[in-house]
Image (cartoon, rainbow, N blue to C red; front, side, top):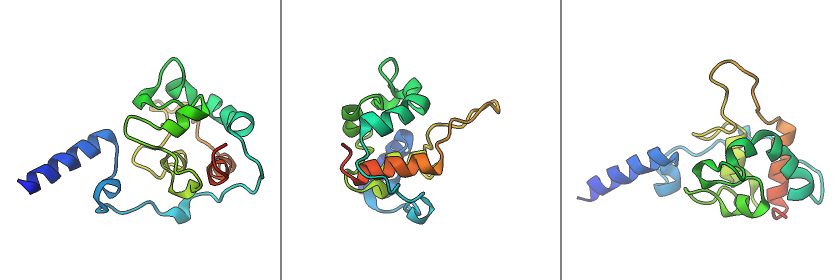
Length: 141
């Protein structure tokens, strides 16, 4: 019976895009050495620094009109609330935040997704990811 429950949990986790590692520590973790370093910019704020990045590359799918996975990246409150799968930010630790992993293309659901038809990628630069990481490290203000 317990084995069946674990298999159901594993299947549900995969369907939600969660790693088993986040549920039971069984899956290989993200290689944090592959993340861009946090920006050295001081006093990074959502309104001034992060929202313009997200407006460019995220809110078309995670904004006021459409919020895939119930993740709103158009407001600081929405980012901190997370998605239907749970938190995407570990305040004070950008390196451990799913949002940073996704932007860096290291998670099972890299964001923004790459275009299927060979169109222009909306990928974030290493500097952009470093700025998001610094924002989270500095308390996600």
